[in-house]
Length: 119
Length: 342
Ligand SMILES: [Zn+2]
Image (cartoon, rainbow over all chains, first blue to last red; front, side, top):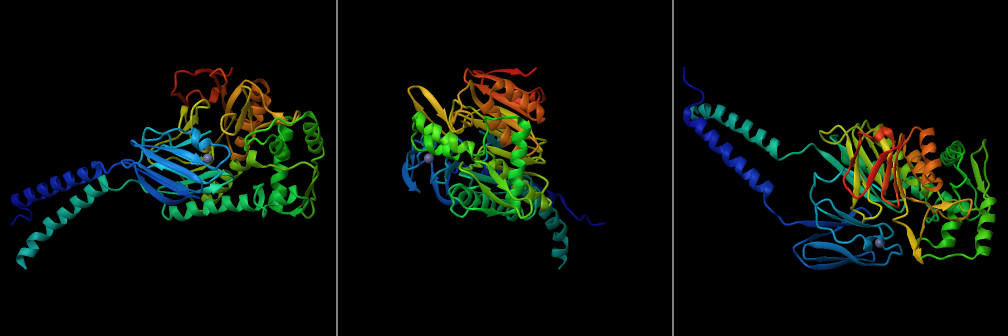
């Protein structure tokens, strides 16, 4: 009986497997640079790259990105909770200005962080 | 043709290998999320491992907005609360039932410090607007109005009217929103979900591959991202009340947004924050506020009466936790000292 899969075919499969695996690992681990998403009322209004020094303003909340860190520099809200939140730079960290309905979150899953926060 | 026949099994094997590899590394268990703002707070809904998850998340958020817009908001002129506070009457089966539930909880807790009518206190002290220390005359006037905040609910037609106090359902609103959102999801047969409205969290089932949700408990002395402990829990609701978010300071004294109805003043005691785990969000919200207002001794008793568990953080960083949380509580910050309530 003729073999359905020859040795050569087997080698080919192994090569394809190794190449595709390597490619996937490369794509998954490639450092695309951290980004942060800004939302107003839950809708995305801006994506910032943490590599760039920038200043953006939405709904009276002035968001500044400096040296890979993001913070709220100024806000028209009265409670200033957002301004007291300090700088964020790790995936999953966020700042919220509830009165102005603005949220800022560093993108990416951080398995070290809890699923949610109470408080 | 002969060549193609020979190549077929090889191609098939290749396809299997590629699909398998991609599914291993490329696709996570599908979770859907949606976010928005309601009750003056950010709202997040996550549904795990469900088809049409995105739709369900949006339905849950719509439900929360519906409750806020129509009933609980004290700022939207369209809401029942706003109408009641401005001399109007409201006819609503939902609100009549809801208010009766609120009064039952207050009655059962035997607390006279908690009130649904803190609206005028908040306005007077301008807690969210820089702060103001009222004169004793101003305080007396507001306390008198509060005394007469009587609410009338017509049992036959669900017509509601109030006296001179100002209704503020904010203390229970976030928990109620979590309840309503999870009810909406359950109706769609969702088994695993997480809802957060501000600092109140409701959860059913489990997140991808784990048995419990991990819920960080906010460090009352840190910023929005700081948590000092983690609770591993599920099928329950968690709320936290504290003096660290909405407050103002004068001469070294901190005035928080939770009022003592017996004095008309912001609550002053040794507690920095109270976290409560309970069977529904309205209850966990109610208990965290009432325990914060009543203080440790009476607060712990109230928690026991309602079969709820607590994490109480004092201003000196000593932490009290309920016996039931002993194995679900992980301390993440050694500057706090934890003891279990006997
Ligand atoms: Zn703000």
